[in-house]
Image (tube, rainbow, N blue to C red; front, side, top):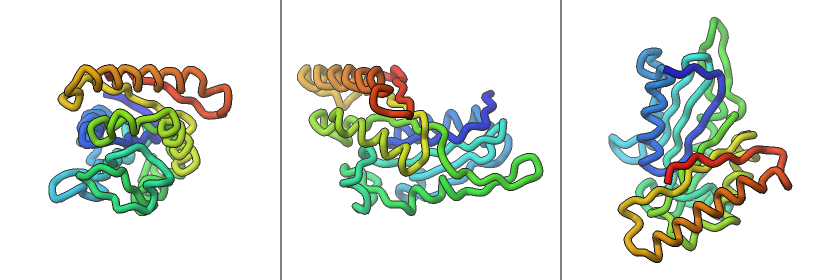
Length: 198
């Protein structure tokens, strides 16, 4: 089991939702009966979920999206099972405006402490996962969600890696993510970390 008073949001595709479900259980979502589905990606498939409170009084959410956060995708259709990564503020607000009881008082999550991105290779082609997109996603996680810590999972070797060229591209993406994190502090007050998933 895990206890935290942090507000954590995971953003990514259906694999992210599965990772989030495991963390939901470790944080007490079933035991506390505090897990709820905010919206469906499609009938029977979670699109947005929330555990509030967690053990320790925090909040843990998951947001299914098929591309990294970007200004270009803001306002685009939030097609749940198609490439594009469209998103809208109606998906952001439930995480930032959620009120939940903790130790006899109502708590409102006004910002996320941490946002965790699973880079969606498969939904995004290798050439779409650029340094600029990683930086923009991290900056939007801070400006929109208030996150001071942003974590990127490296891209794993999966069934979406179909050729040696794609495998080399994935290696370059992971090297680039590590480099962005290593140099982030030079121009930002927030923190970018890497979780080795690949």
